[in-house]
Length: 490
Image (cartoon, rainbow, N blue to C red; front, side, top):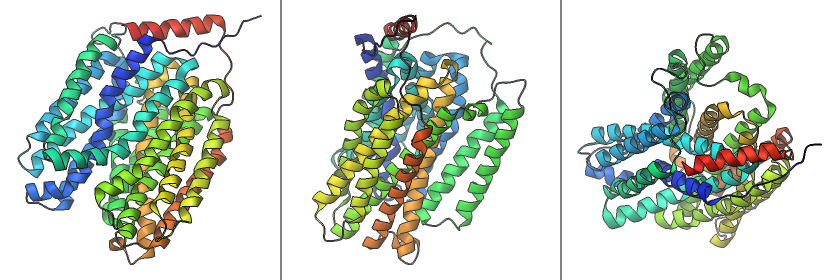
């Protein structure tokens, strides 16, 4: 008879690895939203329009999206440590260059360099932590990482506003340099080198797949971003990239299923696994719901309560705080209980809190919306960490980079879709895109009912997630613990 044990302890070496990895990853997460608050200042600085300045953010996100699929291939070709250091250095070069930008064109170009660096680093956060944690600790480690993922989008605009007002727009980029240098130095000591990769070894790049998948994801992201800004889908700037992106991704699916000579960037057959398909779909829906609330709530405070951007950002912070509190606990519990029931509970909490937001009127005190947003965060955090844990608990080790690529891209697309849908709902109440800023309470209530509907879809998908994980045998636990400790020590 096999003896079963559970050893989910996080030893000091693993904790150091988690800390160093999250220090490097947090810069890209914050930078994706920090710069948005400086749009007016940058437009005045470079004497240009807001639509031109918006490309400093859009270009960053597109570069990140294009890079992520290629990163999943590069892991096997160059190794995690070299790739991590390359991504960090490239991000720092882009940050320094962005701080020294002399016109809008140079700023956009240097933000693209930043985005490429973030596209290398961000998915590697998932890869490094998933490999170090092993199946028995996946939920707990993903829960700790989820704290950064939850607080990043919320704190980015707040920190950006503080830095902008106190030190100027260039400091929004300069601030990355000391953090990044420390992250590089610590990575040299803590991030494992891994087995040596001989020159010319490793998988060949699926060039055709890269030329189909990366632009396909980027085109869809561009379409959703445009839809959010214009508050309508029926526009050439939305429909053309949307159709092109879908066509490219369909082309990639056909190519990947027929590929023989090279391994595809993403193995489409991964989706034949019910747990994988359910996990990445649910995580995409979490991104959709989170960014829908993140877009609607600040507008609610600004339009109906007359708050400024900084006050509105601070009032939204409880959403991220709730998620940050729920994720570590839910992730830890998922290692013992599995994802299914925890996701159900989180979805129910988020659904009830969303209904609570729909009952808030223009004359309601801010305390009620703050409490409801906090509860939405708790619920979505209770969904997110167990879902990521279940993904890495069931994914074959050699497929972790590909799974991370899919997870991150679907979360990005889900967030963009959430913003676009809420903008469309708010505009539909008024007389078009211009009505978003002047939407009445009916528009915001419609947005929160949309979030409620998303939580119901998550609830409906929860039975597809894995239940209670089987306890590892003593031999498996020893092997997992040894692998994680060795990875953390190197």
